[in-house]
Image: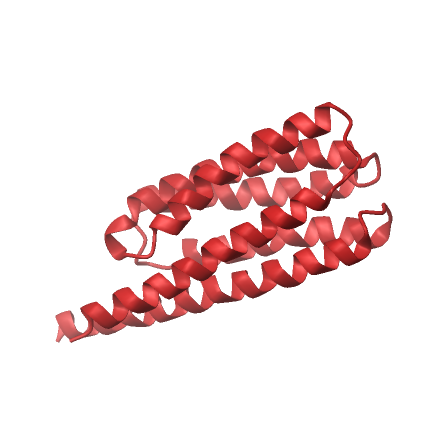
Length: 189
């Protein structure tokens, strides 16, 4: 009975995690389109967009933290991700009132700071399937973050690359969701 209950619980978690990944994909597309439509102009719309993105990230990771199927090591990395994302939401709100270059610096630091725990969590959860795209996404976040940081330090005034970065991250969530679905079908009794 315990084995059946544990298998059902794990299966339910995999379905919920897949939905979360697919939802993050849809959100990334909508957010990037909104950022492009905002035209990168400073103001309340840009500030709102910049603050919402890391808060959605924090909420999604918090859902994963609360899941009892994650190991302790994964939870620590995820809590770091949540904390970093909330701090970054505040920092991006402030940065958006200063300049696009400042936004890029903050975004770059965040990409590195969230990419590292994402990579660590995905590596630790790789036995569950669907994690290779998350490993790649974490690694790319680290590299892209360095690029955004360099652009910001050089005084860049274009934020379009951030929209592309969000779309790429969304694609990785889509791939992870698809992979989880395939993995669940293969391991189903």
